[in-house]
Image 1: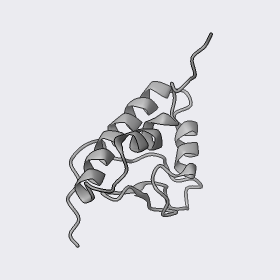
Image 2 (image 1 turned 135 degrees about the vertical axis):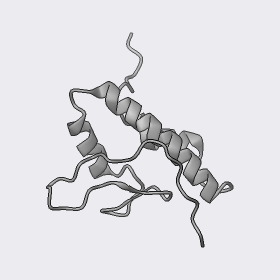
Image 3 (image 1 turned 180 degrees about the vertical axis):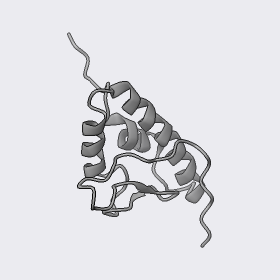
Length: 106
């Protein structure tokens, strides 16, 4: 099976590896699985590291995740257009857990 070549969108270079001598929890494109643990990316460890890394810059994290959501939607749809994850599932996976997802305040 030949996988499609990923587009030149945002490069997933975060989160940085922690501890530094362990493999980074970065995605394998175009499958969007974690290089370190094999879970769908962003895995739980990647989410935690991203929240820590971007703690003082939540807008930057939201922009970064939104760009990767767009790239993942494109890649995963091209791999499997019929039974791949829905756009809503991908939104929840990439963007929904990040900053600015607060409930309505009364």
